[in-house]
Amino acid sequence: MHVIDMALLLLILLTMFLQEHITSIEACNKLTPDFYSESCPQLEHIVQTVVKAAVLKETRMAASLMRLEFHDCFVSGCDGSLLLDDTANFIGEKTAKANIGSLRGYEVIDEIKAQLEIECPHTVSCADILALVARDSIVEVGGPTWTVEYGRRDSTTANLTLANLDLPSALISGPQLIQNFASKGFNLQQLVALSGGHTIGFARCAPIAPSLYGPLTDENSMNTAYHTFLEKACPNGSAPSLIPLDDGTPGKFDSSYYTKLLEGNGALHSDRIMIDESGRTVLEYVSLFAKDQECFFNDFAKAMVLMGRLQPLTGSEGQIRTNCHFVNPPSKLKTIPKTFNHKLPLRTPAADLHP
Ligand code: HEM
Image (cartoon, rainbow, N blue to C red; front, side, top):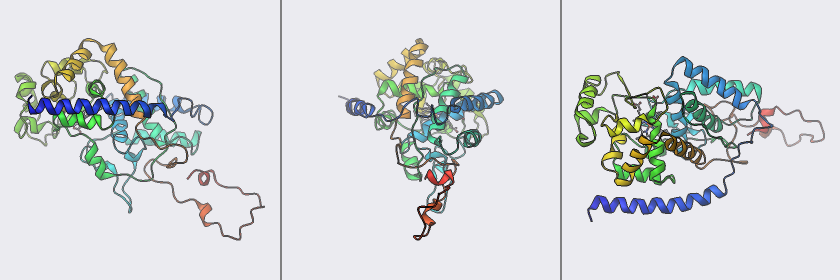
């Protein structure tokens, strides 16, 4: 057996093992769709209104916003850690290789959070906002809908090292890509479905140039005309052009990404390896989703729900940040002197009750 086939077989076995494991994780899923039904019934309306306006202003914003959920959940779980700014205690994830100069849409999350803090103060976590924003963004550009689960709480720290390790690079190899997704509990079908997120949005020349000018060689999976198009658009790695990830319909969530990939028009090396060096099963799923959009939508929606369940903080873990950029200031209750008379009525600012 060829070494690559052997490595793929091992990865498939690992994936199957992790799937078993994930089933037991699902069994104790603590997130629920009605978590805010009493504490913030306006949540879905507020988020939908802000997302709709943002996407109307700029279609690409749908792509940028839904990508935030992926980059939050793949790094120590869906805990809003992605949104934290650097502090004296830690360097945040915004400067990770996959995020810096690339992630967009933070201001839309800020607008939503500001409105929610007026309507339902100290109630909705930044992590839950990201999950709902992802769903609504996709719906805005014609994609599938699903029921969003809530109850995540926000982290009090971020992990730049882990962000650099766990967020896949466009230069990744087939086996590494499979391993990366398997380590989060996703099988091959889910990997291919989630990669369909690239049916919307754009890439800069930076992640594309290594396939054009080396060190990568992608000749088998890219057609000549598309190669020439990319060379013209990205005459060097730092050209300011934006390349559609779906060469057919970049502003529409549909299955065109898979069709274009099969035609040799995949923009990123990490997309093209699915038809080149990730094995027959992966290629079969690409072909299936290219032919059957309903099947893609179904699998994508289910995989997004699973992504949203990655290691959430729940119950008394973490906190509900009042500003997604920062951890809440220490509670004033801690400074109450020991001689404090507990019999006096206590009017505590609501913020103090929510660490
Ligand atoms: C399979 C591994 C993946 C790799 C290696 C990868 C890598 C990338 C890269 C390099 C870009 C272009 C960034 C830039 O030039 O600034 C990009 C954009 C994007 N990615 Fe991924 N990605 C992956 C999976 C996903 C998944 C699972 C989703 C969502 C479900 C997703 C959603 C997006 C979107 C929507 C954009 C466009 C964002 C925009 O236009 O602002 N990606 N990705």
